[in-house]
Image (cartoon, rainbow, N blue to C red):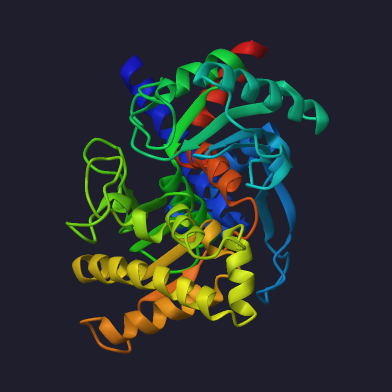
Amino acid sequence: MKQNANNKDAMKQENRRNVLSIVSQQPISRADIAKKTLLSQATITGIVDELLSEGILLEIGKDNSQPSIGRKPIILGINPTWGYIVGIAIEREFICIGILTIDGKVIGKTAQIGYAPTAETTLDVVANEANRLMGANGVNPKMVIGVGAIAPGPLDITNGRTLEIAGLNKSWHYLNLRDELEKRLTYKTFVQHNSVALMLSESRIRENIPHDNMALYFLSSGLGFSLMINRQIYAGTKNQGCEIGHSSVDINGRLCDCGNRGCLELYASITAIMKDVSYTRKDIVSWEHLVDLAYENDRFCIETVRYMSQYLTQSILDINNILNLDAIIITGMGMYRGDMLLGFIKDEFQRKTVYDKNSNLIIKGSETKKDFELAAAGAVVINQLFNGTLYTDIYESRTMTIG
């Protein structure tokens, strides 16, 4: 009897999680949830009533889109302020911290934080800033449901550890980032590769767009990459993600910190491009400055953007030749005024693809134009809330507290 009760409870929790996942994708009626889940109307009504009473769902209006006789269906949505998320984005040059609602909106953020001499002292500053942000934005610390921390790879996601991240000092190597943050902030913490987190963020925005197989390029100080195959993010056998930035485009080329030669990020990352530019044009102070000058018809800057596009296109061609994808998404600092870069990539791709020259591959910039790193950090926790076990953990914890 006890086994049957356990199975029944597990099934109930799975049904609740499925309902939350569906509603998190888009506002929807009870009847449409029943159609998607194949559960009975009575079962859906019971689950929805519970979730409404717990405050995570809201009735947000009536469905006026379809003609109907009698009462119009009531549309359900996620209550964005049911809980809050601390997002921490670790980049090679700086760290960003934000507070997000559970629908992924950034309601407060810090300026970019520089690095202290060691990882431990830096994380002390990060924790203090996170606590300050909660106060400044009127967030009750008890309403924070988790921390999403993202960083460049390589990472050991399973154990929440960094590995030897190029560009960060050795105190960050083999650091148990998850434990260190939980010790300072006391919230359940989820660590993820920044490119995988960006893919999670993109897939949330694009839930109703039929991109089942896509790749994401993250153009920043380095060059990140992630893959989604059959709507599942591919993270490799050891859950360490993909490191296309360290695929070689010239076996006799520049020596990389990873030990390889000719790594893609030595030719197509913001850091690499600006290093090359500095030898010729001392007046250009940033990537944004370079792009602005390109739009003012500065030939050197236009050709620099084209140079970057050629390396990126070659990588896209190689990946697509292997996987034949639906879409390529490009995000990061490199997409500042990104239409010129995208135009060069699309033209080059069409000239060189082995597939039909009218290939249906979509190459486009991210939907997230602002605070993309923090949106990605938040998406890590949101994914755990609506597709993992976080909601059940929180629900059981609150029930025990009340009991």
